[in-house]
Length: 392
Image (cartoon, rainbow, N blue to C red; front, side):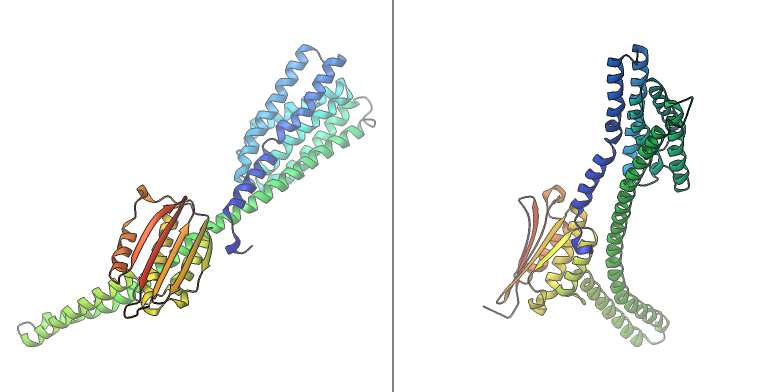
């Protein structure tokens, strides 16, 4: 899937699906031994004390499974594994299965919560322990089931043991696959977040490079001329005054060029800023659509609307949790208008920031205007201007 097709809602939907396929699993598995308890009481296999003890064991497996499966939502191998407690709960669940099998054949239903616990323990464990845990728990459960169902002659109990081994193996397989898939999605989402940060960092570096190009040359020349003027004072005052005038002119030029960089006049076009904005927003997971052709905007207005797009993009990243963004460009005769919209807006205090206020001043200087407002939970940044010297 390309970056442009990324939809953050898919991550949330997948997270919900994974949660419901993992967390309620242990309570669901507990229904099977609960059925064994009910039938055992009716058939006289269990007394009151046995029912209470087995019910407490079942409750412990549910609570342990819920805690561990919830932590697995952080990814493969990231579950909050507590080996002593988890091992103890697994052991008493295995013991409950063995005891239930000695009382009646339906005791094999206790292999379900045992398999559920094993399925949760394996993906929560470090990678080096997963295969040993898988093989060990499957064989151990099968052996316990075999000898508990037929202690004197294990051969008749082999079918029960194979069934218990199958339940444990399948539970481990299903849960590990689900957690592994979710872990891949989490990794991709983290990579997307890093990509968004890098896109913003690249934009900052681009601006820093432009500023360095402007400031570095001028400051170097000013420093050299200043040193020369200092040496000429008292020796050739006329030449020193001429150098001082050149230094002042260079300083004014450096100041103008710096302002040009800051305000987007120097080497800034709407087409360039639009491409940068699309890349940054899509890297941040904001689906972006563009209606209109930026190339049709008159060249004198390209820097002005480029600055508007850049400021709007910055506001989306800083002041919203946007998932969708649309940009519309309309050129009607000498008048050009641009609308940048994003959902899930959260402007600070509902007021325009200093960046938008600066845009208003720049647009008003050419007879245009800028407006930022909330419309049905969408934030709209509108700008319009007319090319000077042209009339409709």
